[in-house]
Length: 356
Image 1 (cartoon, rainbow, N blue to C red):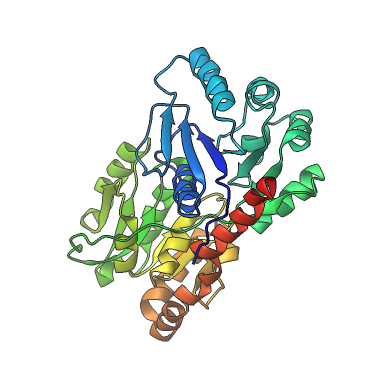
Image 2: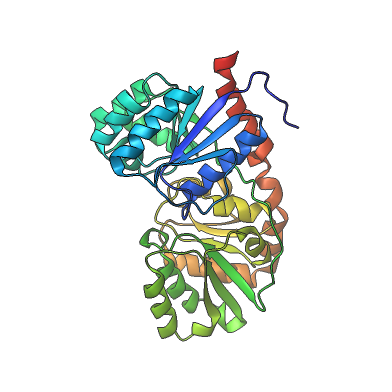
């Protein structure tokens, strides 16, 4: 049970959007976790795109021009005098990061979050700029231990901490699909490799056993994937459902979840599937899957980018009933350490330091 933390601490969560991707879902989830932990939360977006739920006060600067939005952001930050800023942006442009470090965030304690192993997306490709970020940021929070270790090795930065994403989504009932299926969830972009997943599925034993493939998500590759499905011999067994807010329901109903990304950060889809009792097959890609999946305990970890091994793993989940049942029995317990209560306490420990 969460306990109110005395003086209310004001938190600004800042990101570009609240839509589409896993980073943005983590942005959304943290607003709920902090609001439920009795922080005063202001959710600030810099682009006019809000699809995920938010908790606290929403400030949308995406309706203004590029220059106006940043002047208005600075004015808002100064007026509110936040105790902490938590930054969910990609940080690619060195000049823009100088603006944030020495103008927008000047005078504030700010925390930078890191959500994948592609560190250039968060520290720019310039090591000098990365060192500036390290020297100015209050904390660097990585969503996985492996990402934190990569930061230490690449930049020699020793003060990073690890706080995983939290699974606080609510599962609402929807109409069940009229067939058995395995499931994949994510943006329809090349990073997720859904095209190769479709090809691998068609080579597996699943279609002939009337196990369908369901893919949830939207993205730039939708038309190409639809064409690939239409040209396959199992087009009636492969379904693009589009964006679904209530993915937990589909996870719970699935035979298993499959993840084929080139890389990840801390894949929430794996955590969500395991939390509702659904086992998972995933590439052992950087980073995150190996921190969630114990091979042949709660799922199957496949050699990274080995699609032949992926096919074999899919067939094993279909044919090896003892293995499948054993993995399912271990799913929920395996992710207990990622409960909202435990993750909340880590954020409370970090954020209450200013007011004590």
